[in-house]
Figure 1 (spheres, rainbow over the protein chains, first blue to last red):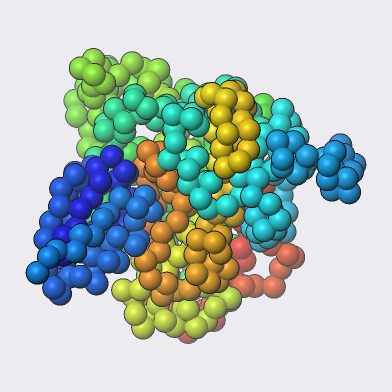
Figure 2: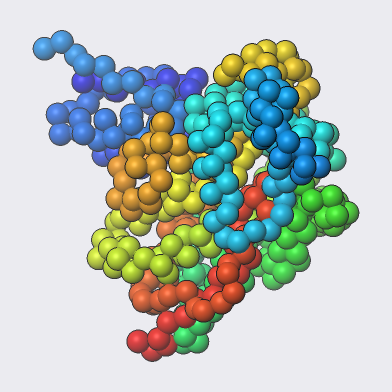
Length: 68
Length: 415
């Protein structure tokens, strides 16, 4: 699985890095540090990634299932 | 005027505008605590949109998706006015009332000052300050929570966060009270509101002059930082700096007071939740986040329509005002499971208590931390408490922001 943040939609609520602190962190302005980027989600972080996506008030996070 | 509303209810065909029921509602009056949320729920369940012919008239959108879309569409809904009962406000707060594309340029200046990193750095002194205030209250066995802590603590934190001596707290508290008395739309309170705005501005004008006279850096000094900041490669003007500092004071002092009051009324009435948070302190941030959703102090938020359009089935005209009923949206069962319940361990909480879209609350990270600190420091010293007998609790008019007037609490001292 990969997690992607849409930088045009993210406004820095901070819910994602709060509920998934081992997966995501913030930048100096308080936005998630991977705006307009995607990262690989390790197997033990899948629940955290799903929580982050579902907690985003802007619906800025997309989860992409990868082909095996 | 209220007869008009009654007639409208009885004769729906005549009492409609743009397909919506016409109401006549004044959101500026004080009511018994909880009445405004009950009203928001009622409005939301009866119709998705209304025309309120109060004042110069405005549209109310009551449900989650419409409120979210108002927030997310600044090109259609301008922040030029955020109070629908006052489409031409006498003030211009920055960045609150600035639209894209300039809005984000101002936010870039302010965001780092209020970032999670800055808040984390301040947390030790925030805790120490709170622990001290609670230690003074604990032996008394009773307090009036709003005056004794909910107002005092965020004021002290905020002032130290922007570099103002905490000894100025009383002066700022008076400004904030006078401002919000008028902000919700009560015309009698407008002169006091104007005087408060001027008072805040005068304070900061003197502060800017002092810094020009003595430009040596001061620690944690937001005014000094703004004087060095640039907007598109030019320095900020004094007017811009004052428009920023003015709104920061107002937003930083009042909102946390309101939110803390409802949070502690909940904890006073729910011993099982107190016990849960004492046993599992890691749940405190979640409990605070759910309070922001369920006990939303932002009753609603206004915007001005930029062009003729149809929005969620309602025809809107350029220059008209809309009001997104945030308190209704945050408990909308169309969007949330068990929307009408406070669930301390609710997962995946999201809400619009800090707005949505580009104007997401600048102070959100600080406000959350303040609330988390107060809950944990209070429960550490006063684990068991209850609402003291009193007249029914009263909340300030909800038009702008809800707040309990008083919250008497009691506990067994020395327990």
